[in-house]
Image (cartoon, rainbow, N blue to C red; front, side, top):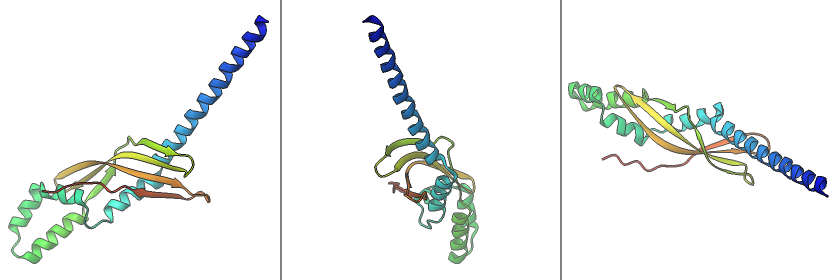
Length: 153
């Protein structure tokens, strides 16, 4: 009787090990979705294409070189051109560490958290953002960025 119980205990441990190894694989797939080049590029493009980007506005507010250029400008047209050029020169990056916040097997969607950085002229700022990566049935990835609150005083 004892060998049967030991065999059952061994089988139970083996099944548990298989279940746990499957969880790790799901986590790795979710992390790959968050860190994929497609996802990163889509997130960065979302911010760089936004002409009213509050993070850039915040960064420009604290730029001493922008302030110097604006003070040297002779007309409102020149100031507007300087400000527009500074906005367009913004450089965005996502931190190397992108975390999985949640995953939904039913919808095939992963919610990710990352730090978005922007540099404009002599000033940089960063903000934690959330974005979602959804795998469609045809294998296409859809990436959306969650709106965030950011007040510029």
